[in-house]
Image (cartoon, rainbow, N blue to C red; front, side, top):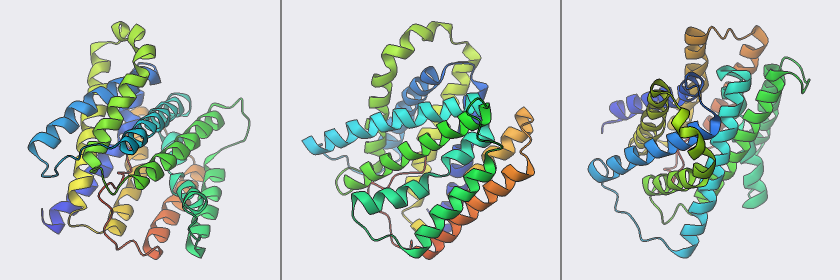
Amino acid sequence: MTPRTALGALHIGALMFGLTGVFGKLAAASPTVIVFGRAFFAVLALAFFARFASNTHWQRLRAQDGRRLLLGGLLLAGHWVSFFIAVKVAGVAVATLGFASFPAFTVLLEGLIFRERIRANEILLVVLVSIGLVLVTPDFDLASGATTGLLWAVASGLLFSLLSLTNRAGSAHVPPVQAALCQNVVVGLCLLPWAAPQLSDVRPIDWLWIGLLGVFCTGLAHSLFVASLAVIKARTAAVVFTMEPVYGIAMAWLLFDENPTLRMLLGGVVIIVAIIVSSQLGGGSKKPKVGAQAPSH
C-alpha cells in the first residue's frame, strides 16, 4: 500500500465510521438488537480479513490478555448501545458530536490511570470540547430529547475512551484485528440473552442495514484503518478521522432532513478544530503500537 492509497483508505474508513449512526437510524430495531447484529456481522468480516487479507500472525492469548479482551468487549457493548440510544433519541448529528468528546476523556483518564503529565495543548482540548458540547446542546432540560440524547452520546464517548485505554494496556501482545474480533465475540455473547427474543421481529430490510453496519462500518473500516497505519503516521490518521462527524452529519442532513442549527454547527466546528489542533501539537508522528484502537463507533 502506497501513502496515497493509504490516505484514500483512511478517508473511506472515516466515511464508513461516519455512516454508523445513519445505518443505526435506518434500522427499525432496538439498540440491543442493532449492536448484537453489528457484532455478529463484524466477526464474519474481521475473520475474512484475518484469513485472506492480513499478514499478522495471531498470538496465543495469556490469562491477562483474556481478561482485558473480556473487559474491552463489555465496554464496547456499552459504548455501542449508548451510542445507538442517542441516535434513536436525538438523531445522528447530536449523537455523533457527543461521541466526538472521547479524546477529551482520554486525555483526563490517561493522566489518572497511567499517571502521565497532562500538557497545555491537552488542557486546551478538554476546554474546547467542553465548550463545543455546550454549544451543541440547545438547552439543558433533561425532558428534552436532544439533551438526553447528548448525555447518552457523551456516555458513549466515555466508554470508548475507557475501551481505548484498555486496549492500550494490552497492545504490546495482541494484534488489533485479533483484539477487535475477540471483543466483537464478547459483545455478541453478552447481548444475546436480550436480543434473542426480538430477532424474529426484525424485518429483512433492517437486517440489511445491520449487516452493512457490521461489515462496512465495523469490519472493513477497522481493517482499512489498521492496514493504512503501516505507511501513514498516527497524527495524519487522527486528523483524517476528525472528518467522521462531518460525513455523519452531512448524510443525516441528506437522508433524514436533520438540519443542524447554526449553534450546533459552531459547536461541531469547535470540537473538530480542537481535535485537529491537539493532534498536530501532540507529537503524534510516532507509529502506533501494534494494538492501536481504531476510532470506531
